[in-house]
Length: 153
Image (cartoon, rainbow, N blue to C red; front, side, top):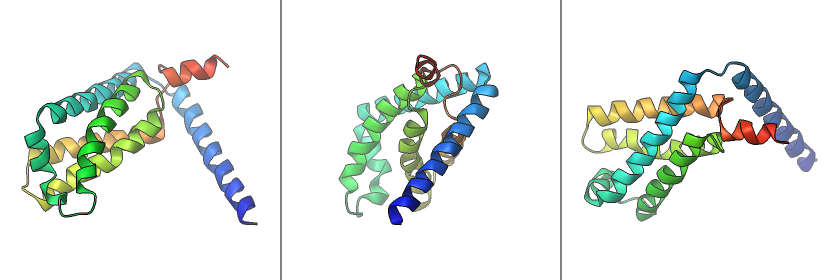
């Protein structure tokens, strides 16, 4: 019985994603695609910035260093920004890439409350978080690799 419930739940999730994709493809606009691409470039560049300035990165995660796996945070952020930013730019696996960014952005927001408050970083992290949540539901749109690959079937 549990397996049947799981299958029904998966069907509902897939139906919801399919309806969101249909809505997004019907309401796609070039400015939204430009926002998606800009977000991907921004995240990729943040990955480059973190990789090139390790002292800044270590200072930013200092509030989390006492948590178990604190060092894993350093090794998660940079690759997630590199790969996620690239995937977001081309519009491939956009929802998955956004989902991977959310824990990082939540941590970026929390750093301001657990460590030294930097309002510029708080506003930037909050705005990026909101845009990621939007694209998590909206998807990549019609002008993306996802849409192109879907049309090739």
